[in-house]
Length: 330
Ligand SMILES: Nc1nc2c(ncn2[C@@H]2O[C@H](COP(=O)(O)OP(=O)(O)O)[C@@H](O)[C@H]2O)c(=O)[nH]1
Ligand SMILES: [Mg+2]
Image (cartoon, rainbow, N blue to C red):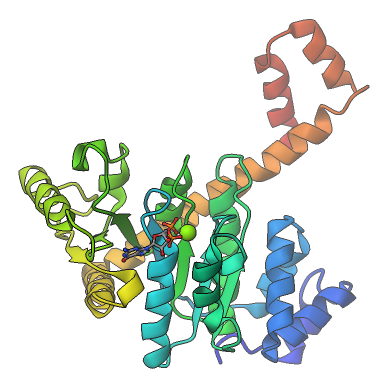
């Protein structure tokens, strides 16, 4: 596999040889030990810098295709992901799921019936399901999710599915990481399509109207279609956002959904769009990493009792001290 590494690189890798536990981890990761993968993702969540060594050692990690699911809580995202898992396993794909919803049935939340149904994949070695905390601060989730996605790809999972909790900034964060973003709607939308959260139509590559077994789903699809025909919403104007009807609990419409995801993937790969996006993503991630490092350094610099903490108290405004910290970063 692409990420297999000769022992040479290990012994010469900067900072690597000294990190015994780290090299152990890489060893086990490469041998396909799923506990090593789980451990690596825990390190990502803890923002442990040793993950960098692991990533460096894995070199040229395989790129997994990332499908993000977002939409209001209760629209059936977890159930849809579960239905998609069933289909993808039939197609013999190795699939990883990162759920950022603390109440996800995948990870022990939600009502009993859902939970039992979802956990049928739990013993399948070609399925990896993991919940990840959305850590509140800006860019936190996408930074961690990007790193986790790379590790999952390097381990051999493809695709990787991200499910958001559907509140706050989580949709935008997921869209920043996903190659294809699926926005999930349902018939019980309250005041209809008009009520859809601002910004969510723009991030969709595919719309799913789930719970097609319930009354009113036609109306949602029709409203959405006429809304999109008036003004196409997607960021990529060369792509027409399809609307797929599904009933996740009945495993209906899931093949159509997967076909739509596949055709979006092909669309992106044509004409170098995927390449451009990958480059943009690397830039975004780099900017996030810079912000993260700067934040960490700033916290250290502002520790109680320090000169800057004192100056900050005198100033009463952040700017002067902020500039000083930034100058110190160079
Ligand atoms: N009738 C119906 N109920 C569904 C469907 N998909 C999901 N549900 C139910 O909707 C509820 C919320 O589903 P869940 O997947 O947890 O939604 P999430 O919060 O978006 O992840 C659960 O009780 C599901 O069983 C569907 O296609 N039809
Ligand atoms: Mg969920």
